[in-house]
Image (cartoon, rainbow, N blue to C red; front, top):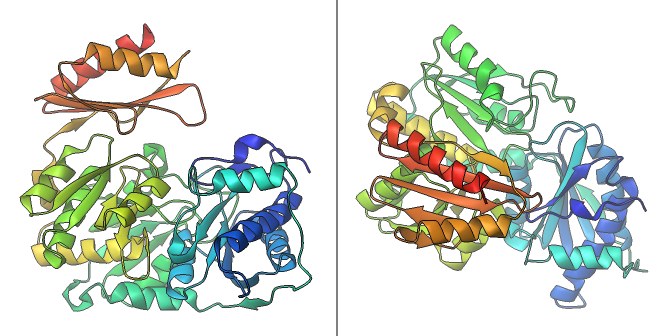
Length: 456
């Protein structure tokens, strides 16, 4: 089996298809996952898992081999076919299955593919939660098939169930006929956005909704501003009220106001915290260590309890479950709700909440979000370094008069600026995010920290 061991990441398995792994790896992964779950669950009962895939050109063949491995290992498989990652999570959680695997490389370019793995309630399998176990089973060939083969069934109605579930969190009668442009980047968000907007009063203008694993229009990564350009132009040309962009597997969602300007994710997260705290007063709200102070401001102003998390969708989910956090959000566009059935990304619920909030306010998107534009962000800056640890040590030593937090990399806080420096999990890179009370302080301090990093 051709295999690059670097495909085992902190949150999922991901690499270049045909170069880092091929179809036979998917079969082996099925056997390894089955063995791990058999060891974890009580013996003697049939283990049931969900399998899904995105629209990438290699996903169907990988899914077939993955299913073959799971069945031959004795697990029952529910195939829900083409699916966004949130829909896959919903299926595992709502149907009370023992876990599952979706074939997807999220926002990565077309030549990539991969796998996101979960246990029951859509609990993620990642670094420290089983990824090492799966890797060890595969690399050491500790796998076997079962004489008691699994049963394969299919279900094409999961998305309808998920839409119904999402609508139960909203009062759709409060949503005005807002004109909304959604750019799905020819990827999986198109499926749930289409279904959702068929059920609500808002008017959908769809952009790049045809599923195409070659990504003919632009990459499915809305975190890069260039990938939002088409959406921004369409919002302006259509005189729309709001623009929405989803990523490759549909688990991240981004927003653009009626002027075609991106709305910072820290602001979106803070406003969502305010909304969810109305429903659950005094609840815990989690957010990652990357600067976005408006989120903390809004949590505190609305009577919530702020909970700081490490960066990474699987890590923030695990913390939300452990600490009974109700809502959590990452700077990268992942928004989670901790529900009775499970804790995972809920882009449809997020879209509904924001449409309802804007409708009730009677304001344009730009006017509504304007009061929250209080701070100035550097954006994430990546630098190649010789020693990641040496950089982190130098930052800690240099800024020891500030308020220091070592939860994830080094976070430093002063009265008028604050920043986080983290090491990349997979490369010799350092990531800097800095925020300040003015543009001038932000630029000055960003330059200062960058110079320090470069001189280590």
